[in-house]
Image (cartoon, rainbow, N blue to C red; front, side, top):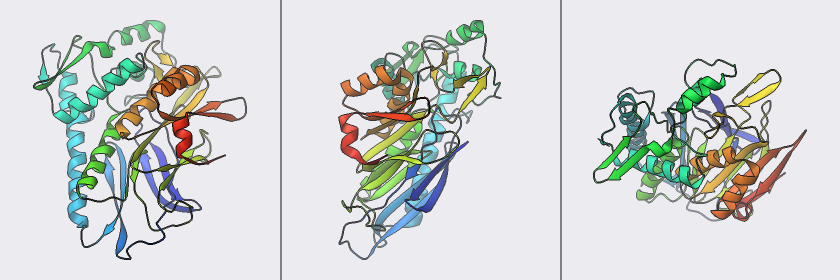
Length: 366
């Protein structure tokens, strides 16, 4: 596991741990909690934390005690997160996804609507990114030693890579909605949703809080985050309302803030190559695998941060853009009107490229 830190600037607030099975990087969450100049004195902050999906979650709610029953809300959050695990976990042998992966049938298999929704978005982004995001890439990730199996730390032979690629391909996954079902053309094809499911889980918790008419909150699961409204605990920012989230500079040996964005009813996800890698013969091999080659990315794009109303979409798009690289990825972000930040590794420094939509959300940058 890698560690994710969230803090008020100058003051440590909370620590969470991101799962190592997900091709995601540590991203420093600097939460500058801002309030309106005048707000009802009875509003208070409630922080709920726990474990889920191989990592931790933090939900911070700003509401009135008279309308918020902490125990009821906490229980429902845990119930909904448990439901996501029971459907999408590859570690729970009886989850809906695990049962599908274990099956060698090519027939239609009914699945819950939530699982259908996540796979549908994953397949959409696979097409949009021209195969840069592939939820069936697990066998190749495992071969390189970046999956849940024991890490090898060695470069596999091309023959082994090609054999693993034979089991991969989102084009072999099919969905239908009446009833919600999935089938695969290859019996040994498996699906891993670790690069999109946490974003989905953030969204469903945010949706639950919306239904409770809670308008000020932050939800974070394993580094994926969504924030809405304001927090009254700090008024140091001139807008006095937005949550301010820090993005970590992509350094493997230290944690410093690179940029800060203001979020309101927006999700954020970051992918990068600087936390999970190994070196052999002086060459660095990242955990981010290009599905087209079956090998780690070789370009100099260190990390990508995406902002989007759907944290699920931000989660998957951050990975897709990282795989595509600084030129192709940036071109796709512009084409899709995405709010995206690209941090490019130079010899001894980093340069940034950002879309206009991301610049509009930027509160601070080095």
